Length: 509
Image 1 (cartoon, rainbow, N blue to C red):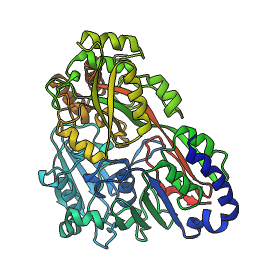
Image 2 (tube, rainbow, N blue to C red; image 1 turned 120 degrees about the vertical axis):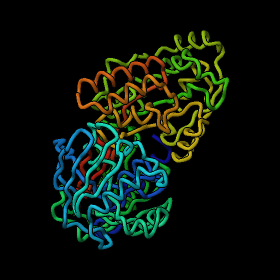
Image 3 (cartoon, helix red, strand yellow; image 1 turned 180 degrees about the horizontal axis):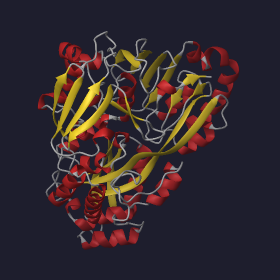
Image 4 (cartoon, rainbow, N blue to C red; image 1 turned 30 degrees about the vertical axis):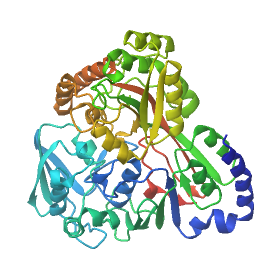
């Protein structure tokens, strides 16, 4: 328990007693749910950021064509009314005719065609291109009908259309441009973003004209406020004094302590998010990089105490991982992955074989969870790898990674909550901007796995890719993440494994 936490607990006890009417429950009185997180998206536009905070805002302010019920997994109509395959690469989608954007513009096929054709175009500079690169073109075939032409068969299409692919208003976006859209975004979703102070807060209000046929229903809470608070102790303090209603990513030790605090509810469970270490196997940052050698990458895998990190540090149902995907995702074959049990002596022996009997020094980059990164650094130091932490924003890290400047990094990926291995393996190993290793054989297997309409063929080829990735130790997969949520007890909130807080479902007690 941190010193800050020791100071906060008695403060919270006092606050709950003295200010329960005017402070702790002030946000309920104002019908404003204030939620805080430790990262800020580089752009509010969902196609121009890939942080979880951006995903949350996306689902609040925009709608997708299809909705996947998180309880049943069933696909339901959202902005689309129905859809069917004309053949293996042409998907016809009929659209709702009673939807308006939050600025009053009517929703139509023009907006759908524009959104996807813009997202796949080079001029969009979309950072989430991997989510749409299966689309060749979208054609308007009627005022409320479009046809998706795919580059190749893509069986996970519905997963993506129900997840990270919201619809933009064509006229408004063309008028204000990307910069203007970041400051004053417009969608069709249950909430409208009415104020953005970059790097600080975003204010949302309930969309009074949200269409009645939406499968998520109309939101119950009138206003939301997303605030960026990078320091975990500050977030905790503001929750306890009633300035914030909801926080997440609460460390397990603090979550345990919070359970005894009055007027605070704590819940948590395993999520689809995975933590992993990348290693620059091609040495694009340094021609003499140790990570070009297989034995070094294997040594890193043996050096990490996954079990200890999962059960003692992350906790809350976390488990050690050896696959470059989340085990529940379709195609994530855990049996094909090479297992690297914690074995510091074997790690040292491998380093010696690689020509580093005394270890070596390296930078390790990270953008979140400094305590996890420091635990990794501690394990590496035990085998002679002296890693210096370079902590930065995700956008900066991604840019350096794509420029080939990063020797080693600790990262996480939540797959946009898509329950398909393509949402992670193909992002990092299929030849795209985030593929450091550029293994052409892995590319071929993933091309087949992503495009085949036969489930067994998909599974077989994902298994081959997983085996190769783990044999070559391109990554050191670490553990599954858990999310610990803490919020005022006046709030009704349900957590889901896909790490998407559905605030439109929430209400005050």
